[in-house]
Length: 185
Image (cartoon, rainbow, N blue to C red; front, side, top):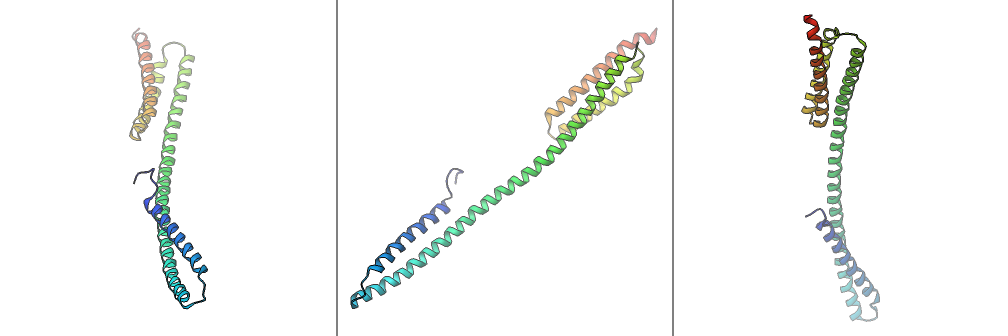
């Protein structure tokens, strides 16, 4: 059955109950009109009464089928609710992981910015030795975030972390180049 079609079990059960109930109502109305003034009419009423009992049983059976069909619909709905609950839990867990990685990346970015500010404040070419180790740690931290983001399938965050790592390594390389000629002087 496609998603757009109503449940055939539910539709069939509803139609069955409706048809049986209509027959039962019609038979009840006809029974009520029988005059009880002759032997023929008494026998006719007795026969109609037996048919009403059978009709009532068919209505009860139809209602039971309808209740069963409603139960099936409820079970389908509950299965979807369970699927939603599981996905919501996954969403929550993934959001926590993402936020943790994003926070760590943000801290690395702030640390890199502070280091850049320190570099601007230091005169001359001497900071290469001082800051090389710190830049290495920042680059390694960005690499670690990128790897974990990749392993968690957060490719966009991994690219950002790798971009930060590349920027830090580029600055580190430039700093080494700038200070190299001064070291040999």
